[in-house]
Length: 322
Image (tube, rainbow, N blue to C red; front, side, top):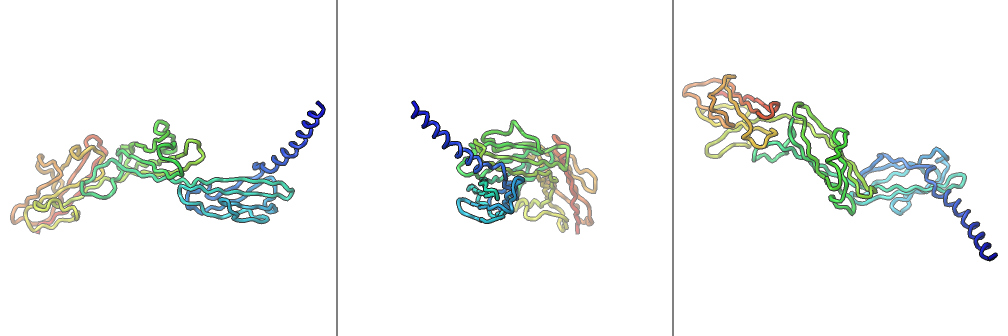
């Protein structure tokens, strides 16, 4: 019995100093590492600095370890500059500090180097030959998709937290919800919405943020010649028209209206502000000038979406008959 008690006393005596030393060695509350930028992305130049209010950093011996290799060491070496790695690969930074009074401290930061691409599309109408991006206009529906680049994670297994104009979109957020749909304000020709997304893995050990601003643009109306043999000459939009012949067909082409199809749009043509025949309500206008008539006049097309009254545009084409 005495032998058992003696063994227990030795065991307790041995563990107490080790516990005290461990507490001194790993007390990371005595300092922190400040980085600039605060949340760097991949392939980013970063400045890391040891900051403390409990000891003199300039008199401490600091060793920086970057991805397992010594990056810098020495007395007062409180700042390390480095570059994060490529997207999808993490960067680990450690700072080991020996203070003047002998305390041994350490801290570790891990930069996920995660990156997000945000791609958006506006559900607005464009001509079939148009190869550019459909722009957002008042009242148009917008679809934004997030394409995160995380290491060892598929997009479906990530959590997406969406915000619109700094307000959380709870119903649109969650696991695998990488797509957001919303509508720009219809009654504001200068509508703009800031969209933010934070993407993280299930354990919240890796995360990244990205934001984008969607701005309403103007509707566009262009005139083209509709040639009976060649079709619409969309390669050249008309700004002025000089005619030698008496007859020509013109096409008024609208861009970026928020409608299901162009059959929803209404067209109205005027000459010198006077309305032409009521039956001419389509996008193609046949201009017929009587023989011997010369001079200049203004041909105007008005296009509107009857379902969304703010969606309208009018444009004039100066026509000269030689």
